[in-house]
Structure formats: C-alpha cells, structure tokens
Length: 400
Image (cartoon, rainbow, N blue to C red):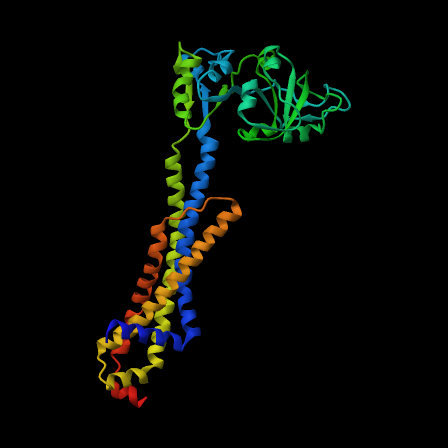
C-alpha cells in the first residue's frame, strides 16, 4: 500500500462518518486553538503591560530623605529650591517634594472655624504638604478650579487643593464663594478639587497645601520624612536617578536614598512566564482531552469495522497495513483539528486585540507548529486502536 492509497483510504474512512469525525476532531481543535490563543494573547498582553509600564513606572524616580537616620541630626535633606535644582537636569519633566503633616492632638480638618455651627470635622482626611513641582509630577486632573503654582509657593500663600474623596468628606462640592478649610485653627482657601491623578492616588483623600506654608506653621517634617517624586522622559530615569543626589546635596548625597524604576525587561519576562505557565497548562489539558477523544472514537470504529478488517485480512492485507490505515485516519483527524484550531486561535487573538485597540503579537513559528502538534496528537492517539485492529483474526471477524 503506497502513500497515495493510504491517504485515499484514510480520507474515505473519515468521510464515511462525517458527524463522528467532526466531533472527534473537536478536542484537537479546542486544544490547538487554546494553545495558539493563549500564546498570542499572553504576548499581546505582556506587550501592552510593557508599554504602560514605560509610560508611567519607567518614567518615575522617588527620592527619600534619610538624613536623620544617617547623620543623627534632625532636619530636611531637601533644600528649599529642590524642585528647581532637579528640574534643571536634562530629561526631567517635573519634580517636587511632599510629606504628610501630623496635626497636634485635638486639632482636626474642618470646613469651618472651630466651634462654628456649620463646622463639619473630618478626622479621616490626610493633610499633605507638597511643593508646586510635586503637583505637576502627579499629573492631576481637575474637577474644578486650579492647582497652586510657584507664585503661591514662593509667597507662602495659605491655599489648598482637595482630592475628590477629601472634598466629599468635607462637604465642599463647588468653589463658589471661595470656601476654606481649617487645619486646626488655620484657614486655607480652597482653589481646586482633583478628580484623578496619574501618580500618587493616595492624594485623592488628602488636603494638599504648599510646602512653604506647612513649614511656616508646623516646621519641617519629623515623624514622616519628606519624599521627592521625579518624572522623566522615556529612557532617562536611570541616568536621572544617579544624578539627583549630587544635584540636591553635593555635600551629603548619602542623605538621600534614590529608588530608580525596575528593569522593564524583567517585568515583561515575569508577566509572560506567569501567564504562559498558567494558560499553557489549560491548553495542554485540552490537547489531552482531544487525544482521548480521538483514541476513544478510533477504538469504537475498530470494533464497528471488524468485518471490514477481517475482509481486508482475508484479501491479503497484513497487520502492518491495518495499523497504517488506522494510524493514517487518526493522524488526518489530528492534522485537520490542528489546522482549524490554529485558524480559530489566530482569529481570536486578532479579534481581542482589535476590541481593546491593541497590536496583536504572535510568533509565526507558533502558528506553523500548531498543525504539526495536532498531527502528533492524532498519531499518538491512534497507536493503541490501530494495534487492536491489527490483532483481529480474519476468520473470527468474518464470523461476526
């Protein structure tokens, strides 16, 4: 039996029972399709995560004040003109210092003076001192009003910007009438309400005041050390991280601890590995189910076609011919399932990427190997049924 005859017999055997053949191939279709879809969607999602990482985390450098623990002397490590010094570095887009202010015991944040009938206190809202550069660095989105700038900072103005959650707690819904918040017994005019920020989402629950005004009233930070947020252009963060300590404190760069962004390649690799291992396991399970389905259906076909097998043996077909015929049928089913599964998986990747406005990412070698994987699955699934078919004796089969 040459290859052409073997292929003809395999196709004829499949087409004689089209419904059963389709159901048999479904397992392989699902397995191979899941493999292609999982591989492509993992690469596509990792690419999008990498892009978002580049836009935010890879352009962010944080600098912590560790002067008290390093030198044993209290006091801020950030100079008064820290924002300007860092923003002069090439590649920096914004930089600013902030810290949490702790009010004295008994003092609260309120929307009216202490003791007034309309005063609504809120002990949950945070009070944050931030320079004008820090507000630029967090990328604020305003609901109303504006953020304070270098003018307010330099003139020690008592103004405040509220996060959306803090404004809701204090009952300030609009800026008509120039509302004020009282920090202890110190009034600050509210000039803006934030609805969202790109960085530092904790500030949405804060009352934010200028750094200079906070130092006038409560002094430099003590319990909560100051921290500088620096935003950079893409690719500049690592270089900026090495330059910031010397730019701020050339006399004591060790007073500052710089945290550069992590390596985006390691993040992407980790995402791909975590997602890939999980979903490839599911794809492997689908392939095993498909192989079991092909083996089961082929074995049932052997029992149903015992008379045909006996006739072939009586006409001179050897055991190897019977084995070859049934292996060819199961292999053809696996190959067909692999082709259809690869096509469905590719369509799934493109559809999901298009709905999310992503760029689909799929390696050509993965698509090319999918039909071969289906073929191998069908071949392995047909080994036992083909061996069983070859063991049927002609006389016994013809008597049935």
